[in-house]
Image (cartoon, rainbow, N blue to C red):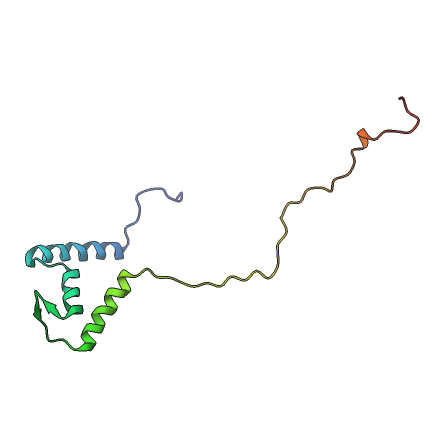
Amino acid sequence: MRGGAGRPQNRLADKQVREMLSTAKKYAKKYGKTVDDILMSFIYARDDDIPMKMTARERIGAIKVFKEFSQPKQSEQTITVSHQEEPAISLPPLEDDPGLVVVAGGKG
């Protein structure tokens, strides 16, 4: 089969993400709070300005989840060039064209 032919394949992970987002949307509509609202209430230990009893460990866990998914992942790479590569195709050396050289004793 040709590459790129036909419908794109649906992976199981894509289906699971769609189902999870759909469920989150239903619950947000039902309870009036999104998952992000709930996560932020854990981080600040307040639910509608009512203090929540949470341990520091629970709050740190919520902060970790927030940071993991809101910060871009960066990978640091160090690139060192040990030698300079020459081009794969090279031009012939420049020499005088024998058809343009003046011959001694020729016509004039």
